[in-house]
Image (cartoon, rainbow, N blue to C red; front, side, top):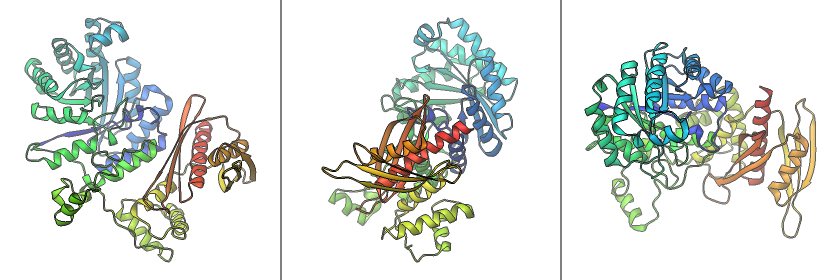
Length: 504
């Protein structure tokens, strides 16, 4: 069976999803998890876009040694040079050069003719080749490009040194049969195509990203570019978990292999969801909350008798156990650490201490603690940024017809206690007004979302907020059995991220 190279672009294309910006620390944490997951290539970002992006990619290249670390660059000399600067210390570096090739892009966006695009493609690939051996090239909007012109570009960039040529369905326009015909044409009409790996990068605008990516495997494609949870520009990218599990589940038809440790899929999905603040829809394949739930009586009866009657994927194969913790307020640190290890968390002694205290606090309030509860609790502890301000106390008074009123107490930058009270249109609004009066950082709340981690009236509530200040957005998260406290924690988390970024 042939190996399929899994090229993960969560940190680049995934981060381009509206509202999905990540801090350097977030990117590093996701990169480490992608390494553990077993992806072959991590596209760490677009270094020429900012100094912060360059530094984040360089840090990933320095630390994450097993996979190929790839930096994206548009066909411009400076972008190529900065890309090399970002990944030159990687164990396995790659530069990924892209340039539009479709007539609609050339006419309306680049305002260049075909000859200029062809020359620039060759020149920039050659420039990247001067730095390293592993160079990838993407003719952007390839599926809307004249095939004969596409053949010329691919032949030219391979001659210039490209070792991977990627065929992007940039706007999610193609359908499987059409895409297969295009790939067949490339193998037939590009004389030197055997010197490069052929890759695809499909977007999901028509809901066909995964179908298109899988369809072309039998036509010679050996690298698929995808993202965790399918996040990305507009409707997103091909979903890594769906690609991988389709290959694993349908070995009768898809006789290929990947290096992915599928038992880490669920944890990776949760991590990306938490750090980007982009919740996974309940009916999402493989990692959605309903992916392995059965409501129909007929389905439930079948599952009880034989799991495969209505489940084609074993939940444990993607890292889902559904186990309820037999831990409580009398449980010790050793048992707590052991369960965290089983869930895939490797905490330092300091992190374990904080998480254990939070667990004890939760155990006093909630009788039945599930793995999902524990994941939410530990995630909040691990996502804590340097706190310029720390939330010490929050109390609200509200109801009908009472005017919602909140009082808060914070610890300030120099350890001083700060307190304030405010009224608002609701309890959360009142809390945020009181906090703003103390922190005094101009910002606008642009998104507020809340969900329960598990069922029941004592469920942990997870709150995600996005605030905007000086045209930059910051994500904050908080979890607690009291949704008002979770809301306050999420807002403080976002404000501390804002302050930490300004400090840097």
